Length: 274
Image (cartoon, rainbow, N blue to C red):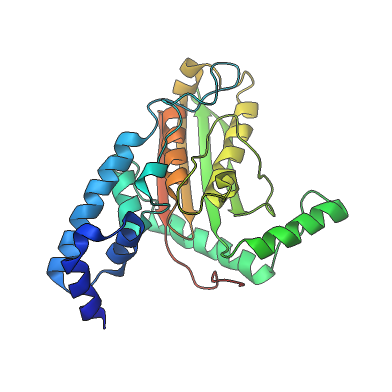
């Protein structure tokens, strides 16, 4: 069956939609000619994504409007929400964002497994209304996605913020609102999904807020941001959507001296309803 799928994919490769392309590339089809042709198309798609990404950090409300086209990518025309593992790694590699060390990945997986074993988190906002919001959102989110990060930031040679954080997609997590520093991107397939609720978006946005506070003068001045060094390592339990790829690049533009490392992998126990 797999060989038949590979043969059909090769015969109709020019007709394959971008989202189907991502699925087929990650399937690593056994027919070498099909796999090679699919990867070539994915590399071309990844280059298109890179060329469409923001050219400067996301708009700050006090500086310029949020509709600044140079700061917010418009990726909906590509008709794909997620490039899959192969395509996402290609985009990040082109941007100079490599994977996190294996030791970090092991720690991240352990922390995520612990969260899964503990069951759904209680509402962090308190009160019956918040608890109901968590319940409804849990029913709407068809797949649980987690992000885990470790971070260490230095400003002018002094460590000002370090730690780790774990977050889950949806409104049941500690954040879930707009960010001053990062902008989500509307996508074409699941167009009603609020990308600010992605696990990695919430996680990185929260870290930005904490860093802004820790700097005791804020992050608005680009020269001050240039002096921020250190590292941010992130693992997500699935490949990031295009909006989150854009967000990660915004983070690198926001803090150009920061070492950003991103890993992702499929993990058991995260299927529908689990």
